[in-house]
Length: 193
Image (spheres, one colour):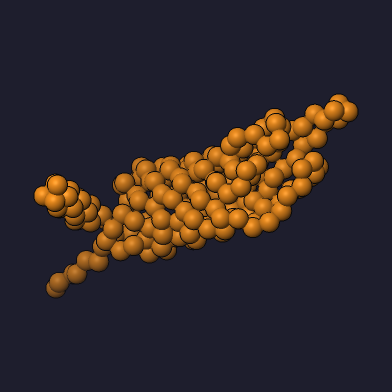
């Protein structure tokens, strides 16, 4: 059993070295601004779920000579629920979350025109209810946010993330982002006379 564990550790270390050798140098800092739509995960007091808006801003640091990046994101998501109460009145409640999340992502084709990525983030979520209030709630909670997506042409980022913070506020987000920075570094050439 001990030999199997050591062999597994050896394979993982060799894989990491191989990934490190293939990574291309990119600019250290990149900024992303994104918009998207959300769908609530699960029901909340038997309400009908509906599409909601999302906005986000993220600052990322690309780890030198690696395919990893880490960043800090500020985003606002909304889980919308519609209710028909006993008096046949229609209400639409928006369960809003303002989230501050630390992310870590792995880029499969860093600095290329087609760059799939996968990542995960943890942070805090400030939640409340906006618009018509049927079931009031507000407070602070832990936020967990796995995500995946693809960056195209080094500037467009299509992503899917799952925000898990509190029942009624959990959602899946589909977003489109604009990325500035993070392009391949220009190689320095030495001209000899």
